[in-house]
Length: 427
Image 1: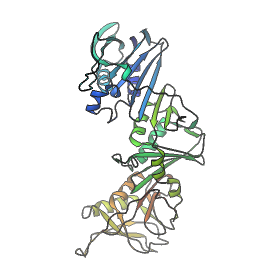
Image 2: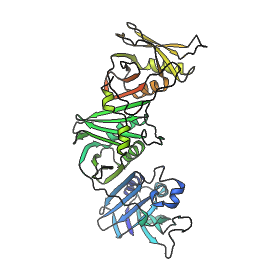
Image 3: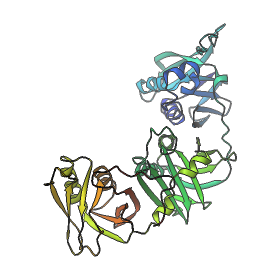
Image 4: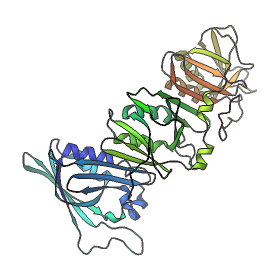
Protein backbone atom coordinates (compact mmCIF):
# COMPACT_ATOMS: atom_id res chain seq x y z
CA UNK A 1 0.00 0.00 0.00
CA UNK A 2 1.18 3.50 -0.82
CA UNK A 3 -0.84 6.69 -0.32
CA UNK A 4 -0.22 10.44 -0.27
CA UNK A 5 -2.34 13.12 1.39
CA UNK A 6 -1.99 16.41 3.30
CA UNK A 7 -1.24 16.11 7.02
CA UNK A 8 -4.39 18.04 7.99
CA UNK A 9 -6.64 15.59 6.13
CA UNK A 10 -4.76 12.57 7.43
CA UNK A 11 -4.89 13.72 11.04
CA UNK A 12 -8.58 14.61 10.77
CA UNK A 13 -9.39 11.22 9.25
CA UNK A 14 -7.46 9.23 11.86
CA UNK A 15 -9.03 11.21 14.73
CA UNK A 16 -12.57 10.72 13.44
CA UNK A 17 -12.10 7.03 12.71
CA UNK A 18 -10.24 6.11 15.92
CA UNK A 19 -13.04 6.58 18.49
CA UNK A 20 -13.57 2.82 18.78
CA UNK A 21 -9.85 2.10 19.13
CA UNK A 22 -9.43 4.60 21.98
CA UNK A 23 -12.08 3.19 24.33
CA UNK A 24 -11.02 1.85 27.72
CA UNK A 25 -11.76 -1.74 26.70
CA UNK A 26 -9.81 -1.47 23.44
CA UNK A 27 -6.81 0.03 25.27
CA UNK A 28 -6.71 -2.74 27.88
CA UNK A 29 -3.13 -4.08 27.98
CA UNK A 30 -4.09 -7.75 27.87
CA UNK A 31 -6.55 -7.25 25.02
CA UNK A 32 -3.95 -5.33 23.02
CA UNK A 33 -1.79 -8.46 23.10
CA UNK A 34 -4.45 -10.97 22.03
CA UNK A 35 -6.68 -8.71 19.88
CA UNK A 36 -4.41 -5.79 18.90
CA UNK A 37 -6.62 -4.71 15.99
CA UNK A 38 -9.24 -3.50 18.51
CA UNK A 39 -6.82 -0.68 19.37
CA UNK A 40 -5.86 -0.08 15.74
CA UNK A 41 -7.08 2.07 12.92
CA UNK A 42 -7.30 0.17 9.66
CA UNK A 43 -6.28 2.08 6.55
CA UNK A 44 -7.65 0.69 3.27
CA UNK A 45 -6.61 2.26 -0.02
CA UNK A 46 -8.45 1.73 -3.31
CA UNK A 47 -8.49 3.55 -6.61
CA UNK A 48 -11.15 6.10 -5.63
CA UNK A 49 -10.83 6.48 -1.86
CA UNK A 50 -8.93 5.86 1.36
CA UNK A 51 -11.01 4.45 4.20
CA UNK A 52 -10.02 4.73 7.86
CA UNK A 53 -11.79 2.43 10.36
CA UNK A 54 -11.72 1.26 13.95
CA UNK A 55 -13.84 -1.43 15.54
CA UNK A 56 -14.05 -2.58 19.13
CA UNK A 57 -16.60 -3.84 21.63
CA UNK A 58 -19.87 -1.94 21.26
CA UNK A 59 -18.64 0.73 18.84
CA UNK A 60 -17.21 0.96 15.32
CA UNK A 61 -16.31 3.98 13.21
CA UNK A 62 -15.50 4.66 9.55
CA UNK A 63 -14.30 7.79 7.75
CA UNK A 64 -13.59 7.93 4.02
CA UNK A 65 -11.44 10.36 2.03
CA UNK A 66 -11.93 10.63 -1.72
CA UNK A 67 -8.89 10.78 -4.02
CA UNK A 68 -8.08 14.05 -5.76
CA UNK A 69 -7.03 17.47 -4.47
CA UNK A 70 -3.72 16.28 -3.02
CA UNK A 71 -4.99 12.83 -2.09
CA UNK A 72 -3.69 9.98 -4.21
CA UNK A 73 -3.27 6.20 -4.08
CA UNK A 74 -0.05 4.88 -5.58
CA UNK A 75 -0.68 1.28 -4.60
CA UNK A 76 -3.83 -0.31 -3.25
CA UNK A 77 -3.76 -2.28 -0.01
CA UNK A 78 -4.64 -2.23 3.68
CA UNK A 79 -2.93 -2.23 7.07
CA UNK A 80 -3.73 -1.87 10.77
CA UNK A 81 -1.66 0.51 12.90
CA UNK A 82 -1.98 1.23 16.64
CA UNK A 83 -4.25 4.30 16.81
CA UNK A 84 -3.10 6.18 19.92
CA UNK A 85 0.58 5.93 19.02
CA UNK A 86 0.00 6.94 15.42
CA UNK A 87 -2.05 9.98 16.50
CA UNK A 88 0.83 11.12 18.70
CA UNK A 89 3.19 10.83 15.73
CA UNK A 90 0.90 12.89 13.50
CA UNK A 91 0.48 15.56 16.17
CA UNK A 92 4.27 15.98 16.34
CA UNK A 93 4.70 16.58 12.58
CA UNK A 94 5.13 20.11 11.18
CA UNK A 95 1.88 21.72 10.05
CA UNK A 96 1.23 21.98 6.33
CA UNK A 97 3.25 18.89 5.42
CA UNK A 98 2.39 16.42 2.70
CA UNK A 99 2.42 12.87 4.04
CA UNK A 100 3.45 9.78 2.14
CA UNK A 101 2.57 6.43 3.71
CA UNK A 102 3.82 3.06 2.52
CA UNK A 103 3.29 -0.37 4.05
CA UNK A 104 5.28 -3.56 3.75
CA UNK A 105 4.61 -7.02 5.18
CA UNK A 106 7.30 -8.81 7.14
CA UNK A 107 8.49 -11.91 5.31
CA UNK A 108 8.21 -15.18 7.15
CA UNK A 109 6.79 -13.66 10.33
CA UNK A 110 4.66 -15.72 12.73
CA UNK A 111 1.54 -13.71 13.57
CA UNK A 112 0.46 -15.74 16.57
CA UNK A 113 2.36 -17.36 19.40
CA UNK A 114 0.61 -20.74 19.84
CA UNK A 115 1.32 -20.86 23.58
CA UNK A 116 0.25 -17.39 24.69
CA UNK A 117 -2.11 -16.49 21.82
CA UNK A 118 -0.26 -13.18 21.53
CA UNK A 119 -0.60 -11.60 18.08
CA UNK A 120 2.71 -10.33 16.76
CA UNK A 121 3.17 -7.42 14.29
CA UNK A 122 2.91 -8.55 10.67
CA UNK A 123 4.59 -5.65 8.91
CA UNK A 124 5.72 -2.04 9.05
CA UNK A 125 4.27 1.27 7.95
CA UNK A 126 6.60 4.09 6.90
CA UNK A 127 5.39 7.67 7.28
CA UNK A 128 7.35 10.41 5.49
CA UNK A 129 6.58 14.12 5.92
CA UNK A 130 7.46 16.45 3.01
CA UNK A 131 7.61 20.22 3.15
CA UNK A 132 8.22 22.07 -0.14
CA UNK A 133 9.17 18.71 -1.69
CA UNK A 134 11.91 18.31 0.92
CA UNK A 135 11.79 15.36 3.31
CA UNK A 136 11.48 16.58 6.92
CA UNK A 137 10.57 13.53 8.98
CA UNK A 138 10.51 9.78 8.54
CA UNK A 139 9.30 7.10 10.93
CA UNK A 140 8.37 3.42 11.05
CA UNK A 141 5.59 1.70 12.99
CA UNK A 142 4.46 -1.88 13.39
CA UNK A 143 1.32 -3.05 11.62
CA UNK A 144 -0.93 -5.95 12.53
CA UNK A 145 -2.69 -8.51 10.30
CA UNK A 146 -5.83 -7.03 8.73
CA UNK A 147 -7.60 -10.39 8.89
CA UNK A 148 -7.84 -9.89 12.67
CA UNK A 149 -9.80 -6.67 12.22
CA UNK A 150 -13.51 -6.97 13.04
CA UNK A 151 -15.53 -6.48 9.86
CA UNK A 152 -18.60 -4.23 10.27
CA UNK A 153 -21.66 -3.79 8.09
CA UNK A 154 -22.59 -0.11 8.00
CA UNK A 155 -25.69 -0.68 5.87
CA UNK A 156 -28.59 0.73 7.87
CA UNK A 157 -32.36 0.72 7.76
CA UNK A 158 -34.62 3.74 8.11
CA UNK A 159 -33.59 7.18 9.37
CA UNK A 160 -35.13 7.79 12.81
CA UNK A 161 -34.15 11.44 13.22
CA UNK A 162 -31.54 13.96 12.13
CA UNK A 163 -29.60 16.31 14.38
CA UNK A 164 -26.67 18.71 14.10
CA UNK A 165 -23.49 17.30 15.66
CA UNK A 166 -22.98 20.34 17.89
CA UNK A 167 -26.52 20.03 19.26
CA UNK A 168 -26.15 16.27 19.78
CA UNK A 169 -22.97 16.85 21.78
CA UNK A 170 -24.73 19.47 23.92
CA UNK A 171 -27.70 17.18 24.60
CA UNK A 172 -25.49 14.28 25.67
CA UNK A 173 -23.32 16.52 27.85
CA UNK A 174 -26.37 17.85 29.72
CA UNK A 175 -27.43 14.40 30.96
CA UNK A 176 -24.18 12.43 31.09
CA UNK A 177 -23.40 13.54 34.66
CA UNK A 178 -26.46 11.63 35.92
CA UNK A 179 -25.41 8.17 34.69
CA UNK A 180 -23.32 5.59 36.52
CA UNK A 181 -20.59 4.78 34.01
CA UNK A 182 -19.28 1.97 36.24
CA UNK A 183 -22.58 0.08 36.52
CA UNK A 184 -21.55 -3.55 36.06
CA UNK A 185 -25.16 -4.55 35.41
CA UNK A 186 -25.11 -2.52 32.19
CA UNK A 187 -28.28 -0.57 33.06
CA UNK A 188 -27.36 2.86 34.43
CA UNK A 189 -24.30 3.42 32.22
CA UNK A 190 -26.64 4.11 29.29
CA UNK A 191 -28.21 7.22 27.82
CA UNK A 192 -31.75 6.92 26.48
CA UNK A 193 -32.97 8.81 23.41
CA UNK A 194 -36.75 9.06 23.02
CA UNK A 195 -38.45 10.43 19.92
CA UNK A 196 -42.12 11.39 20.15
CA UNK A 197 -44.50 14.35 19.64
CA UNK A 198 -41.95 16.14 17.45
CA UNK A 199 -39.46 16.14 20.34
CA UNK A 200 -36.20 14.33 21.05
CA UNK A 201 -35.52 13.55 24.71
CA UNK A 202 -32.10 12.63 26.08
CA UNK A 203 -32.14 10.86 29.45
CA UNK A 204 -29.44 9.91 31.93
CA UNK A 205 -29.99 8.25 35.31
CA UNK A 206 -28.13 6.25 37.96
CA UNK A 207 -31.32 5.10 39.68
CA UNK A 208 -31.19 7.84 42.32
CA UNK A 209 -31.27 10.89 40.08
CA UNK A 210 -32.50 11.46 36.54
CA UNK A 211 -31.67 14.23 34.06
CA UNK A 212 -33.80 14.91 30.99
CA UNK A 213 -32.88 17.32 28.19
CA UNK A 214 -35.31 17.83 25.33
CA UNK A 215 -35.12 19.56 21.96
CA UNK A 216 -37.97 20.39 19.62
CA UNK A 217 -37.55 19.36 15.99
CA UNK A 218 -37.30 22.62 14.04
CA UNK A 219 -36.08 21.27 10.68
CA UNK A 220 -32.90 23.38 11.03
CA UNK A 221 -30.78 21.71 13.71
CA UNK A 222 -32.86 18.56 14.08
CA UNK A 223 -35.81 16.78 12.51
CA UNK A 224 -37.82 13.76 13.60
CA UNK A 225 -38.62 11.19 10.92
CA UNK A 226 -40.21 8.33 12.88
CA UNK A 227 -42.08 8.99 16.12
CA UNK A 228 -42.24 6.50 18.98
CA UNK A 229 -38.57 5.55 18.91
CA UNK A 230 -36.53 4.53 21.96
CA UNK A 231 -32.75 4.13 21.71
CA UNK A 232 -30.62 3.00 24.65
CA UNK A 233 -26.84 3.11 24.17
CA UNK A 234 -23.72 3.44 26.31
CA UNK A 235 -23.38 7.02 27.50
CA UNK A 236 -19.60 7.28 27.19
CA UNK A 237 -19.61 5.63 23.77
CA UNK A 238 -22.27 8.06 22.54
CA UNK A 239 -20.22 10.97 23.86
CA UNK A 240 -17.10 9.67 22.09
CA UNK A 241 -19.07 9.18 18.87
CA UNK A 242 -19.78 12.91 18.72
CA UNK A 243 -16.05 13.53 18.26
CA UNK A 244 -16.19 11.88 14.83
CA UNK A 245 -18.29 14.68 13.35
CA UNK A 246 -17.77 18.37 12.63
CA UNK A 247 -19.87 20.78 14.70
CA UNK A 248 -22.02 21.91 11.78
CA UNK A 249 -22.42 18.44 10.31
CA UNK A 250 -25.92 17.00 10.18
CA UNK A 251 -26.09 13.45 11.55
CA UNK A 252 -28.73 10.96 10.44
CA UNK A 253 -29.53 8.49 13.21
CA UNK A 254 -30.38 5.20 11.50
CA UNK A 255 -31.84 2.04 12.98
CA UNK A 256 -30.09 -1.11 11.76
CA UNK A 257 -32.16 -3.95 10.37
CA UNK A 258 -30.72 -6.36 12.95
CA UNK A 259 -32.48 -4.37 15.68
CA UNK A 260 -29.31 -4.46 17.78
CA UNK A 261 -27.36 -1.47 16.48
CA UNK A 262 -27.86 2.17 15.60
CA UNK A 263 -25.77 4.14 13.12
CA UNK A 264 -24.79 7.80 13.25
CA UNK A 265 -24.18 8.84 9.64
CA UNK A 266 -22.58 12.06 8.44
CA UNK A 267 -21.29 13.07 5.01
CA UNK A 268 -18.15 10.92 5.07
CA UNK A 269 -18.35 9.35 8.52
CA UNK A 270 -20.33 6.53 10.07
CA UNK A 271 -20.35 5.33 13.66
CA UNK A 272 -22.16 2.14 14.65
CA UNK A 273 -23.21 1.66 18.28
CA UNK A 274 -24.49 -1.45 20.02
CA UNK A 275 -27.84 -0.82 21.70
CA UNK A 276 -28.77 -2.24 25.09
CA UNK A 277 -30.68 -5.55 24.90
CA UNK A 278 -34.45 -5.72 25.35
CA UNK A 279 -34.11 -6.95 28.95
CA UNK A 280 -32.17 -3.82 29.91
CA UNK A 281 -34.63 -1.58 28.06
CA UNK A 282 -37.49 -3.02 30.09
CA UNK A 283 -35.73 -2.15 33.34
CA UNK A 284 -34.74 1.37 32.32
CA UNK A 285 -36.79 4.20 33.88
CA UNK A 286 -39.63 5.61 31.79
CA UNK A 287 -38.64 9.26 31.46
CA UNK A 288 -41.70 10.21 29.41
CA UNK A 289 -43.90 9.03 32.26
CA UNK A 290 -41.71 10.78 34.81
CA UNK A 291 -42.20 14.11 33.02
CA UNK A 292 -45.96 13.72 33.59
CA UNK A 293 -45.49 13.19 37.32
CA UNK A 294 -48.05 15.24 39.29
CA UNK A 295 -46.22 17.83 41.43
CA UNK A 296 -48.88 19.99 43.14
CA UNK A 297 -46.46 21.89 45.37
CA UNK A 298 -43.68 24.02 43.89
CA UNK A 299 -41.52 26.97 44.93
CA UNK A 300 -39.26 29.28 42.93
CA UNK A 301 -35.97 29.96 44.70
CA UNK A 302 -33.11 32.33 43.96
CA UNK A 303 -30.49 30.04 42.42
CA UNK A 304 -27.41 31.79 43.85
CA UNK A 305 -28.94 31.95 47.34
CA UNK A 306 -29.82 28.27 47.32
CA UNK A 307 -26.41 27.20 46.04
CA UNK A 308 -24.58 29.31 48.64
CA UNK A 309 -26.77 28.02 51.48
CA UNK A 310 -26.26 24.37 50.59
CA UNK A 311 -22.52 24.75 50.11
CA UNK A 312 -22.17 26.42 53.52
CA UNK A 313 -24.27 23.78 55.29
CA UNK A 314 -22.36 21.00 53.52
CA UNK A 315 -19.31 21.94 55.58
CA UNK A 316 -21.16 20.70 58.67
CA UNK A 317 -23.05 17.80 57.11
CA UNK A 318 -21.97 16.90 53.57
CA UNK A 319 -24.79 14.38 53.18
CA UNK A 320 -28.14 16.14 53.29
CA UNK A 321 -29.98 19.20 54.56
CA UNK A 322 -33.52 19.78 55.86
CA UNK A 323 -35.79 22.21 53.98
CA UNK A 324 -38.41 24.02 56.05
CA UNK A 325 -40.94 25.44 53.60
CA UNK A 326 -43.90 27.42 54.99
CA UNK A 327 -46.91 28.79 53.15
CA UNK A 328 -46.92 32.60 52.80
CA UNK A 329 -43.18 32.99 53.44
CA UNK A 330 -40.70 34.65 51.04
CA UNK A 331 -37.76 32.63 52.33
CA UNK A 332 -37.08 28.96 52.85
CA UNK A 333 -35.10 27.91 55.91
CA UNK A 334 -32.48 25.21 55.43
CA UNK A 335 -30.79 23.41 58.30
CA UNK A 336 -28.24 20.65 58.63
CA UNK A 337 -29.68 17.17 59.08
CA UNK A 338 -29.25 17.09 62.87
CA UNK A 339 -29.36 13.91 64.93
CA UNK A 340 -30.80 13.61 68.41
CA UNK A 341 -27.42 14.42 69.94
CA UNK A 342 -27.18 17.64 67.89
CA UNK A 343 -30.13 19.82 68.99
CA UNK A 344 -28.62 23.03 67.55
CA UNK A 345 -28.19 22.53 63.77
CA UNK A 346 -26.62 25.11 61.48
CA UNK A 347 -29.11 27.20 59.52
CA UNK A 348 -29.19 29.19 56.27
CA UNK A 349 -31.93 30.86 54.22
CA UNK A 350 -32.67 31.32 50.53
CA UNK A 351 -34.92 33.95 48.98
CA UNK A 352 -37.96 32.68 47.10
CA UNK A 353 -41.20 33.85 45.60
CA UNK A 354 -44.15 33.89 47.97
CA UNK A 355 -45.03 30.27 48.80
CA UNK A 356 -48.64 29.43 47.84
CA UNK A 357 -48.55 25.88 49.23
CA UNK A 358 -46.03 23.91 51.24
CA UNK A 359 -45.13 20.28 51.91
CA UNK A 360 -46.72 18.66 54.94
CA UNK A 361 -43.38 18.22 56.72
CA UNK A 362 -39.80 19.45 56.38
CA UNK A 363 -38.07 17.66 53.50
CA UNK A 364 -34.58 16.16 53.53
CA UNK A 365 -32.66 16.53 50.26
CA UNK A 366 -29.22 15.29 49.29
CA UNK A 367 -26.83 18.26 49.05
CA UNK A 368 -25.07 16.67 46.09
CA UNK A 369 -28.29 16.45 44.08
CA UNK A 370 -29.35 20.02 44.86
CA UNK A 371 -25.93 21.38 43.87
CA UNK A 372 -26.00 19.34 40.64
CA UNK A 373 -29.40 20.80 39.78
CA UNK A 374 -28.35 24.38 40.51
CA UNK A 375 -25.20 24.04 38.42
CA UNK A 376 -26.98 22.49 35.44
CA UNK A 377 -30.05 24.73 35.38
CA UNK A 378 -29.79 27.98 33.39
CA UNK A 379 -31.04 31.32 34.68
CA UNK A 380 -31.16 33.05 38.08
CA UNK A 381 -34.19 31.14 39.42
CA UNK A 382 -34.83 27.48 40.20
CA UNK A 383 -38.25 25.89 40.47
CA UNK A 384 -38.41 23.01 42.97
CA UNK A 385 -41.54 20.87 42.81
CA UNK A 386 -42.76 18.06 45.07
CA UNK A 387 -44.79 15.00 44.10
CA UNK A 388 -48.02 14.22 45.94
CA UNK A 389 -46.25 11.82 48.26
CA UNK A 390 -43.44 14.37 48.73
CA UNK A 391 -40.86 11.71 47.91
CA UNK A 392 -39.91 12.77 44.39
CA UNK A 393 -38.35 16.13 43.62
CA UNK A 394 -38.34 17.99 40.30
CA UNK A 395 -35.94 20.86 39.59
CA UNK A 396 -35.98 23.11 36.51
CA UNK A 397 -35.67 26.69 35.34
CA UNK A 398 -38.95 28.67 35.24
CA UNK A 399 -37.74 30.21 31.97
CA UNK A 400 -36.22 27.17 30.22
CA UNK A 401 -38.20 23.94 29.98
CA UNK A 402 -35.52 21.96 28.10
CA UNK A 403 -33.64 20.66 31.14
CA UNK A 404 -35.50 18.86 33.96
CA UNK A 405 -33.85 17.14 36.91
CA UNK A 406 -35.46 14.57 39.20
CA UNK A 407 -34.31 12.90 42.40
CA UNK A 408 -35.69 11.28 45.54
CA UNK A 409 -36.24 12.97 48.87
CA UNK A 410 -34.97 11.09 51.93
CA UNK A 411 -35.38 10.93 55.68
CA UNK A 412 -33.31 13.25 57.82
CA UNK A 413 -30.66 10.62 58.53
CA UNK A 414 -32.01 7.41 57.07
CA UNK A 415 -30.91 5.50 54.03
CA UNK A 416 -31.49 7.21 50.68
CA UNK A 417 -34.24 5.46 48.71
CA UNK A 418 -33.32 3.89 45.39
CA UNK A 419 -35.45 4.15 42.28
CA UNK A 420 -36.32 0.58 41.36
CA UNK A 421 -37.17 -0.64 37.87
CA UNK A 422 -39.24 1.76 35.81
CA UNK A 423 -39.41 4.24 38.68
CA UNK A 424 -41.29 6.96 36.79
CA UNK A 425 -44.71 6.07 38.09
CA UNK A 426 -47.30 8.80 37.98
CA UNK A 427 -48.53 9.59 41.48
